[in-house]
Image (cartoon, rainbow, N blue to C red; front, side):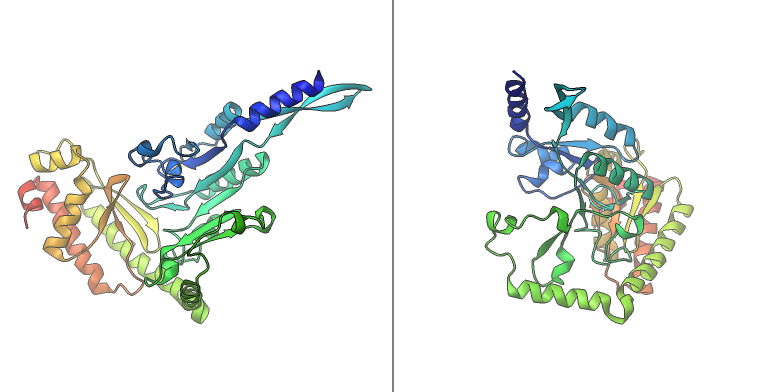
Length: 343
């Protein structure tokens, strides 16, 4: 009877899909599998039946982690001898597949993970045997002033993903770094890829890393210094337009400017853009047409414009951006929708 009970419970647990954890506001791509780990429901819904589902965790809420663990955990009874008798003792069954997170959320509105919550996530995952996957595709490769944005947080992932900048703007490439204790040698055979490890992309990626590390990491210092100059400008803007600008967020050359909700604006054009989820796109269009500044809102937080320039951005370009943003803020303050939407 004991053996039958163990086998029955094992079959039930084995039939359950794995549980993924991800942060609210997170973005992990739009592929059929990874899109289910992206928080924006508009991306997930069309493919909801195609991949394992995720439980989304609010920022700074370790209590929610405990709640999810209590709801999702699986236990498997195993025979054990206690006081000379054979009995069943519950053992944790590994149902949690991975916890995916971005150190600085890009699409989610340029939101930083706090060092405290990063530590709590790492401790939680270590306790339940769940690997941490750090998505550095937007925040990594020196953009925030260090090779990995997770490093200053003290966050150590079991897996890391890097892409885009790794190809130097020439090659389309991506890599996954795996902690040795989690690596399975069968992976690259079972999950082979037509274009993986091609010589062209690998040579470019190595050269990109050489450039980043050259002169004792001068590129990282440049990103930090230029980011501080850009952030200072955005902070001044917020101080001058507190009724229009809600927040300045980010690190290095990965910064966001959040505007206050304009869904009750006196301007019909501005009000409709805000209510229809097009507000950030209208602002970006105005900046491009009137000021020759190219930027874009964050897709899952359209009230936030993102600024992720090259490390070669100079003071004149920052001043050009400032002039454009001050124009935008003045038009929003005045409720001048027609001027904001005109060519």
